Length: 108
View 1 (cartoon, rainbow, N blue to C red):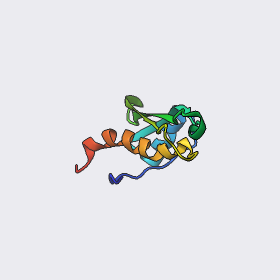
View 2 (cartoon, helix red, strand yellow; view 1 turned 60 degrees about the vertical axis):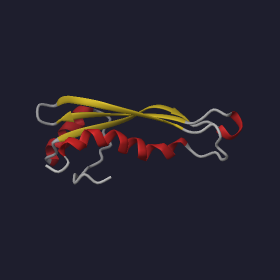
View 3 (cartoon, rainbow, N blue to C red; view 1 turned 120 degrees about the vertical axis):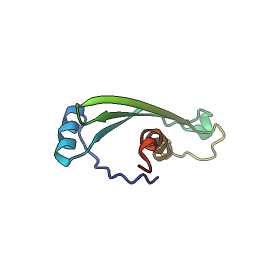
View 4 (cartoon, rainbow, N blue to C red; view 1 turned 90 degrees about the horizontal axis):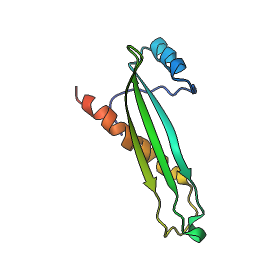
């Protein structure tokens, strides 16, 4: 997914530390992604599908204010023939969460 923005990952777990880092780098937004649900089941023998939920919080660096959040969920098939990890959902969930956040500024 291409939106024409650059991102700098941070290891910080604290939003205030992320704000300080964003200010130092001249960033305009802080995005905080959190996995809110994780089930990596042995679906091929249990028939319990993998489930993952992801939440993206968006903050404006100016004023250090919360702007909103987006959450997305994914569930695997109960007919899985192999034991794939639930991590297979993460890239797509992150992209789905980012799209409505960044779409309003695309093309401006």
